[in-house]
Length: 231
Image 1 (spheres, helix red, strand yellow):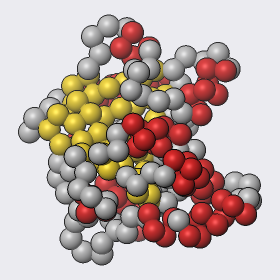
Image 2 (tube, one colour; image 1 turned 180 degrees about the vertical axis):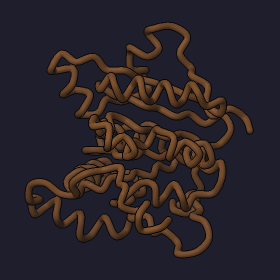
Image 3 (tube, helix red, strand yellow; image 1 turned 90 degrees about the vertical axis):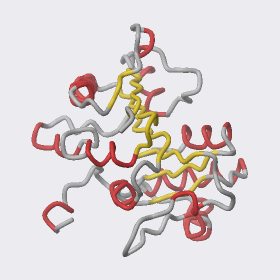
Image 4 (tube, one colour; image 1 turned 30 degrees about the horizontal axis):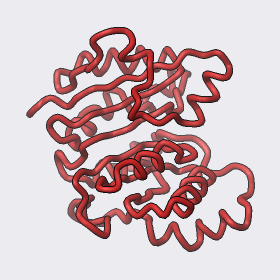
């Protein structure tokens, strides 16, 4: 990727309020043990990131405070989960969840998720979560949206046949944008068969704090599930 492309980020700021000492300690001590290191050459073997070979590898892009990722890891201890989040306060929050629950099946990348996606082998992810991402509402920023013409080839490449892509948002313009691009791409199959399939969060889809904030304001949320069609 050249320098001009590299400045097109899928995220905004990197930090917020100063971390409490306990969370700063997790950044200093736990994060180095769980951090995903991108190889300078070759591909990244996601299964090798975990102490035991996982039955599947899932990835969450922009995990926010880590509530959803930690809940999925606790419910599926046989699955290896990779979480990507550049916002250091969110990383510290996830690390707190990991330490409290004693989770062994989570690895963290604290920078642009595309670094990981580009390093992964073809068909190496069994599920990909993009939940309540920054909608980048201004037209000039739409290129930053992960679901869009600039990234669908990348997503389709790393998803295994039959893998699931989950997208959640309360921003209806981004929902329409994501639906349009995914429905136009014959590599993805929308799994909804009735309105309740996208209006109601599935039972195996833990809530995020961003969803809860949206609902508290009275905003509607949409939950999209797509399957990667066989190659």
